[in-house]
Length: 280
Image (tube, rainbow, N blue to C red; front, side, top):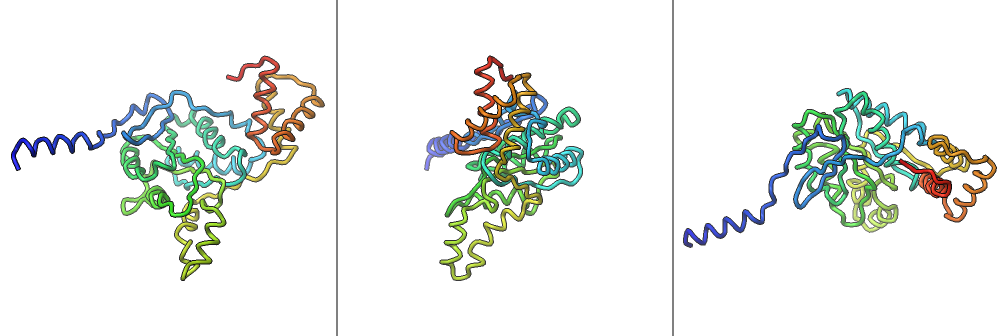
């Protein structure tokens, strides 16, 4: 094989290799999104979130996660957290709201969003975060695993950290509609068909056990739903007679066939639009 051929092969391999990840200016902002192909941390100038005081009906989960995050921001011990339960009840909103609420006192607290599909690259992401002089909340929204999904193995790199251990400056907050991160019928099917039913699902089910905090979010009651809407009205200075507000809010949730924090916000967006109130 000639030198020219070897040179062409080397150049082709170099073109195929992904460029090294450029370390972002962490001082430029407080939020980042991890991307692959090519791997990079994209700075987010403005994180979309609501004020922590507007999240009603999840007081216990709010206080627990707030205390855990504050300790982490101070450099003390803190647990990874799994926020699981009913859709639209403020799981992801709570993570972003708590991050925003603590920034005034802890400006070095950064939020990094990681997509479930990108979990195989998490070890390389952790290597970048480990050496940075900041505290990072690694946020994975809507986390779940289906049959034959191997991404959960990559998640263990965050929860357990392997031989090197999880970085002291990284904590993982994940949200999911599933308590055990996998559908119940999948658990039942594997148990019924396996030679050793207990071992068949133990590895995947035990993944959720690796989270130090389990915070449950349950379906919204009507009083909480109406309180959320009234809180939005107060925060944005929108004055509506209580009987009219109540009737319209109940009609809205009836047409949606659901009642949750998300439905409450969607109703308020419509209400604010009809009354000429800008949401900023």
